[in-house]
Length: 196
Ligand SMILES: Nc1ncnc2c1ncn2[C@@H]1O[C@H](COP(=O)(O)OP(=O)(O)OP(=O)(O)O)[C@@H](O)[C@H]1O
Image 1 (cartoon, rainbow, N blue to C red):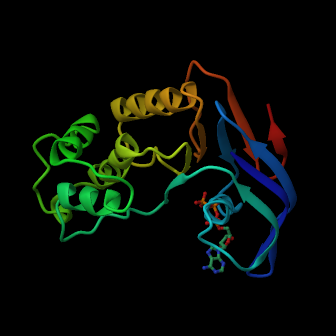
Image 2 (image 1 turned 135 degrees about the vertical axis):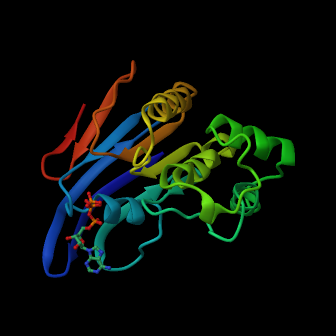
Image 3 (image 1 turned 135 degrees about the horizontal axis):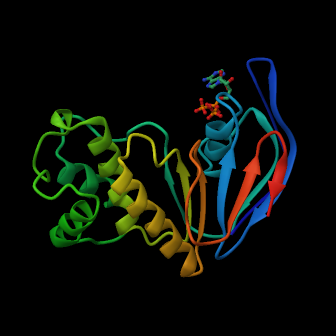
């Protein structure tokens, strides 16, 4: 689904990674690890095609992808329903029922029409995560998806990621947390390379 060849990135005069090569395929769940400032977010943005300059190497994407960034992409003046409708508007046709169901799956039943500025940090993240329930993209690139999510939400999200890869799709995510999933988890440490 995704191949990376000889990727080198320098930012602010510091070499973050050099000659990084790896590939992720169907059924693979890959966690990108590294200390604060190691370059995880920078790497995901390159993989998603959002950063086009300032690095060398080759990224080949072989499937449609969904990228969820580290920062909330929720517009404060819009409700969760409006935010989600806006995000999925270019991807496919979803009914209002689909949007309500996705919001319910992330625990936002009853909050569909509340202005997003009145939501908590975790609820903001959940509006973003609701996009996963409406995504047909085989490749998910998720930057810190577990941040600000409570324990129950973490368990739900872990299950969703496993379900996605079990269907032959691919998930690459960054996290400082150790996942407890009943599924083979690969890891990529930005200082140590790829481990099975
Ligand atoms: N816009 C920018 N201009 C210059 N340097 C930047 C910029 N954004 C980030 N950096 C630097 O790039 C490095 C990598 O940042 P990045 O956000 O990719 O790290 P990270 O591994 O995701 O960190 P964290 O775990 O703290 O989220 C950091 O040293 C940071 O200071």
